[in-house]
Length: 176
Image (cartoon, rainbow, N blue to C red; front, side, top):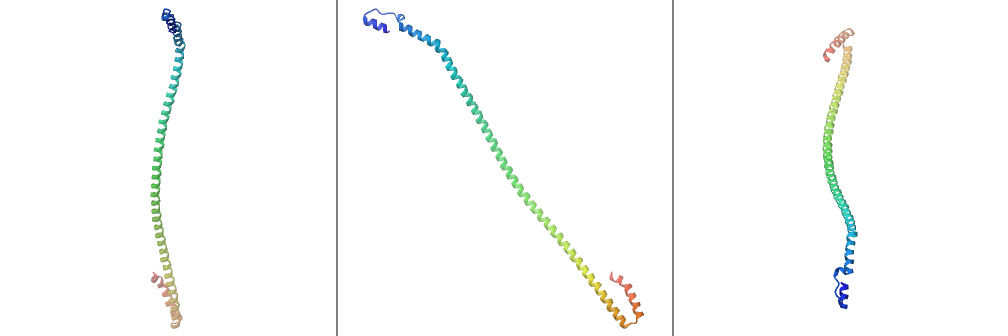
């Protein structure tokens, strides 16, 4: 080409293109690129393919880790909701239990107070009975002493002893 341009300028006949050294240089360069460039191209594309595969694997792993993290998050959120519900249920049951225990304690206190009141009334009744018995005993002693004094003043000793013995014998039957 360059040679044809120079030959045409000098007035020489044109040289066929296959005899041009530039053409053969171009052919040699293309063959060189084909021989040397093809393995390099294969290596470069293989390296790029490997890198793309590693990146794809990392993306898949990241996607899988993200899905696992979302599943774990959902699981923990569900567990937290369950724990909150369970805590609310425990508090509700504790409130019911406390109310039930308070009602039981109030009922037990009322029963205890009634029992103590009944015991106190029994003790009062016993004390009254003892007091009445003591008054009766005192009245009997006073009556006996008065009777004895009256009998001693108005009767002789033999008649008095006879009446006293009869009264003492009748006394247990009259007291009942």
